[in-house]
Length: 433
Image 1 (spheres, one colour):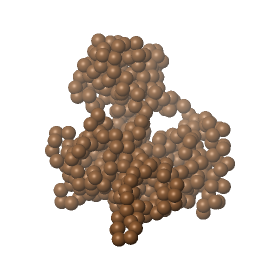
Image 2: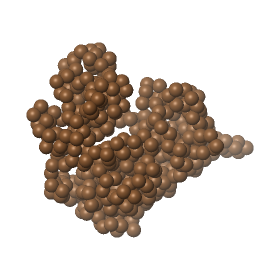
Image 3: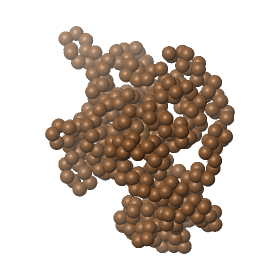
């Protein structure tokens, strides 16, 4: 998000604010925000905004598409998914479900009424509801009492909106596991419990887990999710992993989910599905770090610090001519992370770019890609088309994923973490069901 995004926004005040695209053209107006409640009374995470577009159609805009929130204007980027918005299991409307609700102050036990909710941008880039603007009950002839703003942790009473209560204790047990270990635990659950846990996870967490599951299990799990939820999870997956999964589920089901996906995400996935699975094009991600030569070292370091990037993708920046979205303009070269650390922040990337790595074409075989990575000690490799445009990057972890035997995930797990979690599963469900 840009520097124009406020660090704290009260959502009732945001309602009715005009929404614009990057060109300044009006899109619609903000009507609500969508959030998901979390366990242990942690601040809820904002998933996106409900925007009313012409003909009074309400659509969902992911919060990651919001580039600017200023007084009187919200700016979004990317293509707008015009599918009519409907809340899913695990989601709540902040204004529609939580405002005017009677809740209790933790310290005094006093009942108060919710007047507004404040969201703040966390260090890792998530928007969380951290503040609750409350009104105390009036006394005597006063209909309204004093108002104040308190932290989310200082109030109780929202938990009754939390869905899938049968999985709450189990999710609390599993919340600290890495995605690969959580995937192992889920695969060991009964089919019924596996689906309950999957439906209770948010889209991003479930996408991470599905990426770590074996082919047969992830196909079966995706089949248990309703179409729109499955499409939203696919949007959160890395495009190459989503393309692999769609190849596995059958042409008819894949086409159905592609039509439900955000057009921009679907375009990346469809492009990858045209390549063979074990080719460079089939293994690559379409979302490496791409910059032009006139960006600075400071800009590049800010980009590689993003938490959602894998270490392999964060290891180098690809330098191209405009446009910087894949397929890019002409590929120039790469700047390695270690080189960035050795240069002054104001240095332009064009002066330190490594032009020796020419990359591979999208039809390169798994063996060719692995040999190139090993020969030049790279963590990721550019994939270049015949017109010298950057199509994406193949990372060393994707290569290993394709080279290891099919059941390697079962043979390699964090045994201490997964064993402890599995020991708690039956107890968790017995307490709740």
